[in-house]
Length: 545
Image (spheres, rainbow, N blue to C red):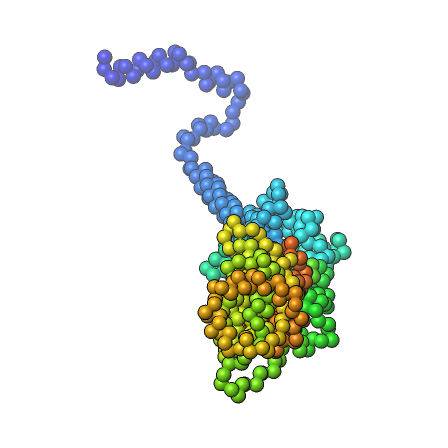
């Protein structure tokens, strides 16, 4: 079948399947005056949705970009605020001055923070919460009212505005309790030296900057000592030394109500030194730090010498002291016109008895006795050595007047019996003047020839001599008139201690510049005390710990 025939058959089939009833429909509608207009062929529609879709896409893009930027600004650290009292706390803030993170920099700060969650809060709210906790726990009070506010921000103007805002918040908080704060504020910039100082002592960059500025102005102040102090103590020390910093702005007055006061500290030092305020010729007082505590550093002088004391600023206790006292003026002995050594006027037995008495032993207790007649600085002296109770003794005694030039003793082996040196002491030497020729220049030869035999003689005659000797005449200038026990008692009394409280007690009689002094050392409370006491007068020549 040809193609035209097929098309005709399909057309016929369609006409029978769907008959053309247009005429019937028009007739039913009545007469029509208007011509029939066929529907125009459909035109192709334009894609009007594309611009709208593009605009929506752009809106979504920009909203996302701005949202991401806003989120980034809200969560990026813009400023770091450090609050220091003694607790050291660091806060990181966003550009909107909301808290991103809080860090406790020392143990005191951990006590303050505890379970406090300040993330996302406004800086004013965070400051109120932190300082309120410090007030409740006693870190801030009427006695301790100093707060250091340090801001780290590259924009100097914004840093200053933030300092002012926080200072105002602190003032409002304190006014609720009728307290006056002392707010120190500063801008800081981290550098290598400042970071190292902060890390070394576990403090904030702000406190490290304050310490750095104070120590730089006074070399007597040490950064390590200042780091252990509160901000209030550091400020009081700086003020007492007239130190100022252009980088720190202060609002309010730092309280010193917890300190004993300069007058009370001076009175404690004078009382310990045994002087009155009227005797003091020069006086200097400054606040300082010593082993992590604030002290009054007091230096004064009298006719007797110079004194230096550290008195606890809050306790009034003596923390440390030194005394440099003048040696008593002594008359120089006139030189002998004769080149010969002076004649012996004190017998060997009397010299031994004097040594035994000074050592607090009897002749019967002594063993290994050795006596020699020697020359010392142009004078004849008896050199006497002996042992008793595990202790070795050495003495030098002048032959002309019985003055003890040297007295030393040394403990023996560890298993030797213990001996209480102070309780063994007796009164000073009682010597007999003897002018008989038997003990003149010939004594030197006799002693050298009969050294060993003299031990028995001294044992036999020692007790008799001790009983028969009369009280000695006054010793020559620089002689020993004060007994060892007295010297030890003087030192202990000056230190405010008893012998039972101290350890490592040592006492030696030495000769310095023609004078005889007791050198006394002992330990107490982790400190070593050293004294020099004039053996003729009992006067304290030097005292220190």
